[in-house]
Length: 304
Ligand code: NAD
Image (cartoon, rainbow, N blue to C red):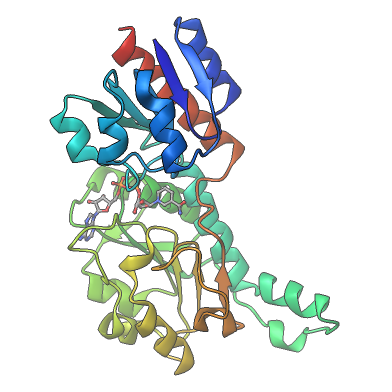
């Protein structure tokens, strides 16, 4: 049986596939025409956020039994159509939790001490000492919106820094909250009382533009917003307005409503905004974990 690996995959994951007797065909990010050709005799496909496994691709693969996403989001896979044809779809939902949490915390320290701003100014030939007054995190309040896998990991780190932690989630894991000394509150209370707010909910109808103009207005003018979840959870136009008019003190964003973020986007104009290109899961460890997890799942489906 053949497995097409259509995106970079950790070498240990490739070994898992080969050791199970599967033939591995590797081609990095083929375009849709090439992918259609490559899938015609494969039993499994492994992708990352690219390439797209559409209905057309699935129809071109009569032997296909499993589609694997070495990561979390299944946005690039037509999951419903695959399932309707009896094809299993697997992913690695926990592989990057720690990495995304560590990025959120990195952004929190960075924005509190204006690290990216200072670096940028020095490279421009300035010495921006006076503009770099920051704030300490110990004793401050962190509001975590979405206390799932990633939110919990952020909470664990926040506890060790000595932050007070407020949580908002539709599902309340009281045991984990107790473990990190945090409490569940209403969203409005969290927004009004947090110094740093970090978002870790999935993108759903109920979370689309969850952070809008009304919610941004509730935040302290000294507070900062961090988003490493999905871009559309924050209303970008409202955020730009909030930054322009000083409703909040800054933002750090790894995800955007439009990715890549267009050149000269209004968000690129603010000194108090940090931008990263959707790198939450981009660590050696997360990628290795994701690769191994999906390779094992593919073997289970195909070999048993
Ligand atoms: P998770 O499912 O473990 O946790 C999400 C939490 O959000 C759950 O506890 C759930 O109850 C809660 N929730 C759902 N709807 C809600 C609502 N309407 N209001 C309040 N809470 C709600 O998910 P996770 O693994 O922690 O991932 C969280 C987010 O991080 C996802 O959006 C995921 O796409 C994103 N993510 C980003 C990157 C990146 O590269 N930046 C990488 C991986 C995951």
